[in-house]
Image (cartoon, rainbow, N blue to C red; front, side):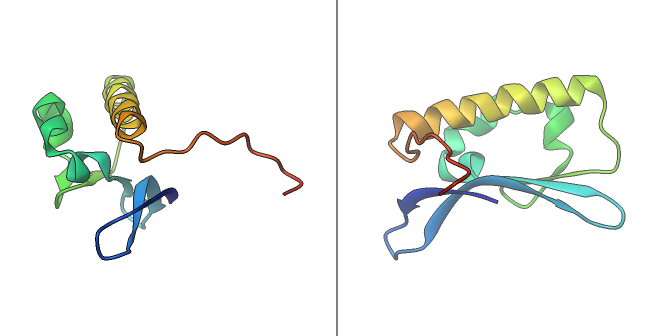
Length: 96
């Protein structure tokens, strides 16, 4: 999971996204579509059919078209979280 420095009103940390490998599928948890529901109309129907719950996509197989759609959606979510101040720019230092 990729966490953000932001917290909800109740103090729970907000996550950007992550993946989980199950036995039968891979889950892509993408929280910008939950935190910013106005992003949902931009989710193509091919991805919407993979949605489980409000922010999770399940994939048994993944083709190049779906990768492109997920890339575009992830980019939109990233830009939105950045605009909303939910991400902090930080250079990763492997020694830290």
